Length: 201
Image (cartoon, rainbow, N blue to C red; front, side, top):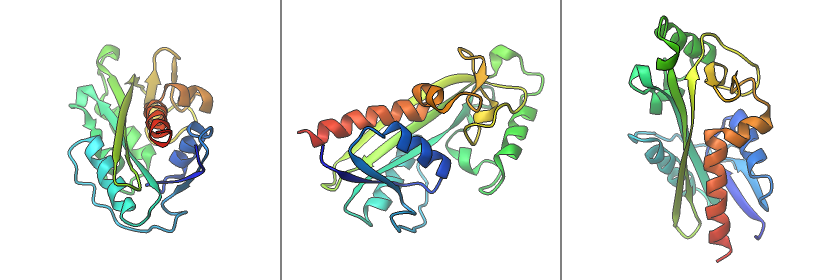
């Protein structure tokens, strides 16, 4: 595959670190929109993760002729009617620290039985190619909401998201373990396959 430039529509450093690690065997230069010098306000007014990912990818693609990838991801807590869902990043306000968001979710689940604490991380990834073609993938990881923050790896809601098969939160997993099973890891690997098929045509 030729050396391709991929711009990822995010400014989140934790996310960029994961993305580069998962896509490291692609012959591509992967940069954030900030590193690409793209500074635009994007209104995410979609009603699903995929719609929001497409909105972000199209907005950035309008500023470049590179391959653009965007993701929209979030946490769905079944007991809370799948909140915070597509509002995960904006839950309790755009600049509220995740430690506060995590504390709030734990408090809202006070007294809720273990088997009713089911939740999942969802990640949708959209790609806009230089010729205008669009690709999309979506993946999830199932788990439960813990009773306290655990672990220092990861970011966002990772410290309260327990993975039963590991008996750990996603913030306690090693980077390698997390990327193998995470919603973003699965969605990115599926996108990588689609991209390679597209470029190998």
